[in-house]
Length: 258
View 1: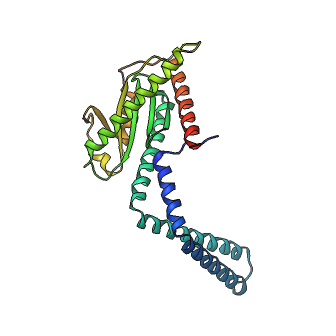
View 2: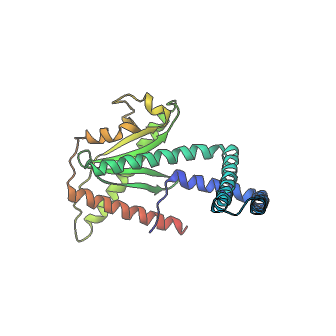
View 3: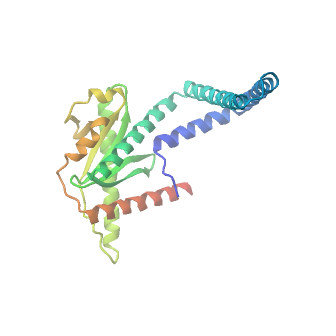
């Protein structure tokens, strides 16, 4: 089964791969040093500590702790040298948190489903949600410590909504040319920015900028429950979710062959 990683995580992984390739000699040397230290500590423990069940547990715990400390050191060095990595990591946190809230919304019956990480040229749509009473919602997840870039976030969300409208029009147009008509009718796409991190505490209820709704992450579930703009039937909603999933899978397959 294909795992559709968020755009931010894909960029973060690419940054890590590139950083590791440039420093592979250093990383290899440090790995051998760490293995040597583990061997020395293990040998000293076995020789000088009485052989009891606790001793073997201590050996395993020490080895695991040293490996964890080594990996943490490498990770810290990576984030210290790659400033963009911190931004991508925060973006991944925001998308993960939004996904968790959407799972709660589906369990409570506020949405029919959603599709994450619809890949587009140069970016993606973070989450395209098929609601029960609010049409489609295109969510752009953001992790911010401050809200100084509201205009930029609003512009990004509008672009995502426009792309979502284009995708749904394409899907429905293709279906109209087929033998069976789609049971999903065209739906209004609402652009939304969901803010996580410290900045979410400064987002007032009902705030919008340039016709884009800004919602604190902790209030996303409540906001979805209040939507009453456009009813979507169960059959149409699930049908559209399936079509969007197929569209995403097709995009990933075509891009992976390039």
